[in-house]
Length: 339
Image (cartoon, rainbow, N blue to C red):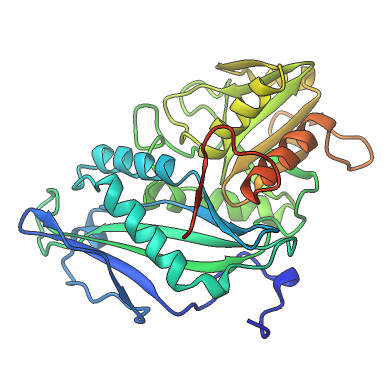
């Protein structure tokens, strides 16, 4: 793919050759089949359009120094999609269908997996939608599962460089006991207004407080929050946070490094005691936090010196990336090699 400038890719959609689809109809899933079409033909009364029966995932494939293509935490994404299915009463997608469809989509488009050390990766987007035509508020009887891929650069244009976050108390990401723990489109639609306001004010993202008491850290607009305090890795526990697979991986790596893990409610006032802070997710891996401004309370919490990411965040970032690219041993069996 000589026409693609791998080192200057944005985090956006770039056409690839194939996507792969499976349909649920008459009580069973069809065998995944490839198509070159970028369009979906669905009924105007489909439940995904009217009642939000839609779930998705995000994962990446990387080309190693050895030329092999590695997909990071394939099964974990399949399990999280099953959780989303249960959360909004969609037909649960079998793990084997998820994995077969993803592997087929990556293999068919392997020429679009960016070169080693280009700073880019192949982003994989599994999507599940309810397609039954109906106007009553009830679960769909038929579903479409599809996977498309696209090469992407860094999620934040700054890459692994600290950026500022803002607390906007007048916005909530999700309700307690609501759908915040599921990866569904409605949660992201609900974050667009606050996210745009943050960008206009010069911040990379919103850091939400808990929707009930506005006292505890919830999560960043696009990612989970974590902090480093001495030899402790701290991340919030809440009934409205999406369980980030990247965060789960970082927790394991921090444990491997001998760190103490605390997953618990985190008061906003604790921010002043942390040595480092970051938000983490598939798209950015880790985006270090320079500072967090609570503009309505006229407070600011700073986490970096001279705009450089902290040593623990840097070590965790480099370790995770090394596993994704095959530069370090995959001791936890997180990687699936595309044959």
